[in-house]
Amino acid sequence: MTSAQRLQAYERRSAGILTAAAVVFLAVYAWPILDPGLNSGLVRACSITNIVIWFGFGLDYLLRLGLAPGKAQFVRSHLLDLAVLVLPLLRPLRAVRVVTALARLNRMSVSVRGRTTTYVVGAVLLLGFVSALAVLDAERLSAGSNIKSFADAAWWAATTITTVGYGDQFPTTAQGRFVGVGLMIGGIALAGTITAALASWFVEQINTAEQAESDTRDEQLTTLITEVQTLRTELANRLPPRG
Image (cartoon, rainbow, N blue to C red; front, side):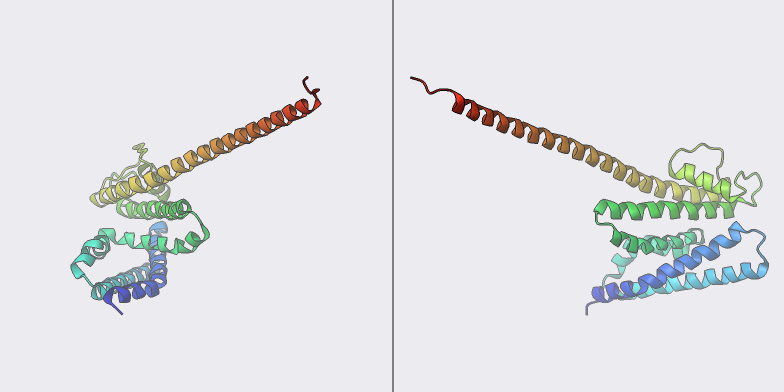
C-alpha cells in the first residue's frame, strides 16, 4: 500500500471520530458562553475537554503529515488546519468539521446541486453560529461593547454573513474584529454559492417550463397537421371522379 493509500485509509477511518470530537468541542465551547452563570466546576470541565480535543486534532494533523507522501505539499494544502492548531483565536473553527456529518444527507440527494446546497447551507449555519459565539466571548465583558447577549451576536452574524451590515451591532475589540474579518471572508464565499445555486435552479425551472411549452406546441401542431391531412384524404375520397 502506498503512502497516499494509507493516508486515504486513515482519513476514512478517522472521519467519524473527528466529527464526533468537533460536535463535543462545539458543545463545551458554547455552553460557558451561552450560560455565563455556569458553576466553576463545569467551566473547568469544559476547558479541560477543550484542551483534550485540541491535542487530539494536533495528533491527527501530525499523523496525516507523517502518512502524506509529500510533506511540503500537505502543509501547503492544509494551512487552515495548521492555523487552527497554532492560533488560539481560530480554535473555534474546529467545530466546522461538523459539516462532514452532512455526508449522510449528501447520499440522500441525487443531484450535484442538491449535494452542494446541503453542504453549503450547513456550513453557513455552522459558521454563523460559531462566529456569534466567538464574537460574544470576545465582546461581552468589553467596556463600550454593544454585543452583550447571544441574540445581539446572532443578529450581528446574520447581517454580516449576508453583507447587509446595518451597523447597529459591531465588534469593538481586536479579537472580535478578527472574528468579523473571518466571517466576512467565509460568509461572502458561502452566501455567494447559495445565491448562485438558487439562480441556477430558477433558470433551470424557467428553461424546463419553456421546453415543456414548446413540446406542447409541437405536439399540438403535429396533431393539427395530422387532422388536416386526414380531412383532405376524406374530402378527396368523397368527391366524384373527374371526367
